[in-house]
Length: 160
Image (tube, rainbow, N blue to C red; front, side, top):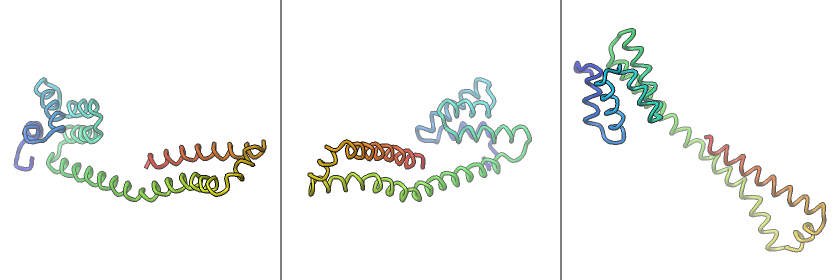
């Protein structure tokens, strides 16, 4: 783009030189352009079809650049830098959340392991609790809380 190509021509050149699966998106955009659709509308449509948030963002940037003018190469370069920074931040967040995921596994498995060890070394202790109505309630409550905690920790680890 910085050597003088117009934005639509740059998209056509990029679609020829891009690998899959992005080539499908760019080809769809150029086909929509040839059919008479504006570039920003074509990028928005393809971004929504393929659920690619970066293309939706790019369509907004293109719409602003086409409406208010300015150098498209600078706008596109800044948009690309923003997208790279955002992707880098997502990778860093994933790496930093590894401690949370490990803690979730440890906290989730610790009661199960401790219960297993107690059953192995002193099964009579657990069986006496199981035979008593209040002890049975305690065991079932602990089991339910363990399941609830595991679900909550899994959701916490997945959300990060």
